[in-house]
Amino acid sequence: MLKFPGSATGPWSRYVHDPNARGIGAVRYPRLIAKDTASAENLQESALTNLYNERPTWLELAHKKLEAAVAYRQIWRMNLSATSRPPGPCACQTWPKAPAPSLRTST
Image (cartoon, rainbow, N blue to C red; front, top):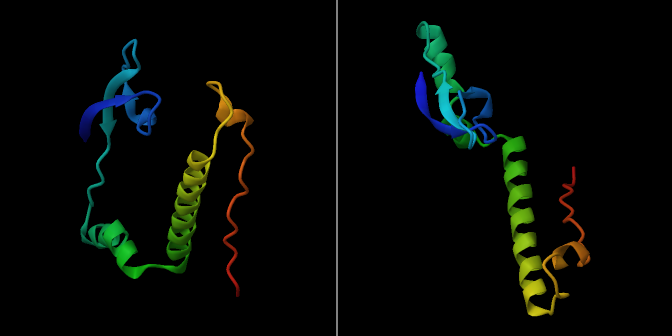
């Protein structure tokens, strides 16, 4: 069992016990330990390192989609900083939204 402090509203929220007034509690995360040799081999095969070494198609496409979205967002932000924005603290809400990038793959 791994134990460390965590937020009740963060990614570990389902493992947080006894949060204080600020929402910080003790995370108790059950560590996966193989019960026998066959289970150990199965855990080893499903490790992230193996997943990235194999690079299945769905993972490759997810990476390309993420990289395109990040690049698009960076270019969009550079374009916005080059022009004048409307004044006010909530100007980003009134600024026109840019269209999302299309990542269709040909079959």
